[in-house]
Structures are given as structure tokens and as C-alpha cells.
Amino acid sequence: MTTDTLNIREMCDTFDVTPRTLRFYESKELLFPVREGQKRLFTKRDRARLKLILRGKRFGFSLEEIRQLLDLYHMDDGQETQLAKSHELAAKHLADMEAQRAELDEAIAELKAQMDWGAAKLAELSKTKSAAA
Image 1 (cartoon, rainbow, N blue to C red):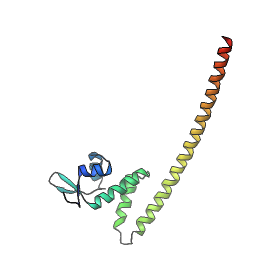
Image 2: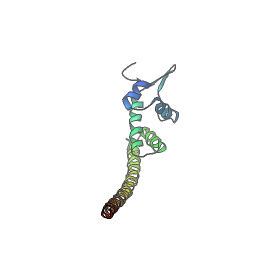
Image 3: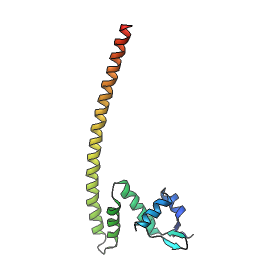
Image 4: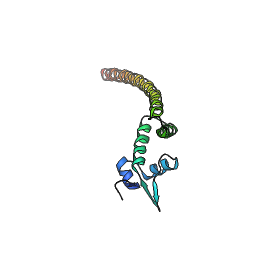
């Protein structure tokens, strides 16, 4: 192995992914490892792409959105198109995530209120039961 490439095990260890994940991204034409017989060797380009794929997934981007962003890298405009599209998608996903957080905060508050009501009701029933005894 050279320092310029990593085998599949080294990629898995470096990025905390499974071989199946790497093969899946390869089948979706997001990664392009060099083949030497049965071995897959991942280049610096593959490592950079995987880092972006994983980051995009964490932010809620679909694989198709990630593919589109990665494909824009090779345009001859100093990455302006890629950055503009990335910003547009990021803004959309941020708005979605903030809406989800607001819904979750509301559900948490409602659940806490129900739990407080339930605890008070249990305490009241417990008092009534011990007073009757």
C-alpha cells in the first residue's frame, strides 16, 4: 500500500463505515476506487468525496443531492456553481431541521406537562388511598 491510497479496511477504519457502505457508494457511482485484481484502492479524491458524502448524509441531504454537488466540482467556474448550489440546499435543509426541532420541542413540552399531570394525579390517588386506610 502506498500513502496515496487506502484499501477497503483502512477506509472503513478511517471513516468508521462498513465495507458494505463503501461498496454501496461505489455502486451508486459516488466513489471510484482503483481496482487491482480483487482489491479496491481508494485515492485521496475518494477520501475527500467520502468525507463530503458522510457530512451530507449527516445534514440530511439525499444521495442524489450529494451526487449533484460532487458533480459540480469539475465545472470551470472556480467552484462558484458548486458553492451556490451547496448553500441553496443547506438553507433548505436547515429550515427543515429547524422546523423539525420546533415540532420536537413542542412534543417534549407537551409530554412533560402530561407527565407532571400524571405524577400529580398519582400523588393525589395515593393520598386518597392512604387516608381511606
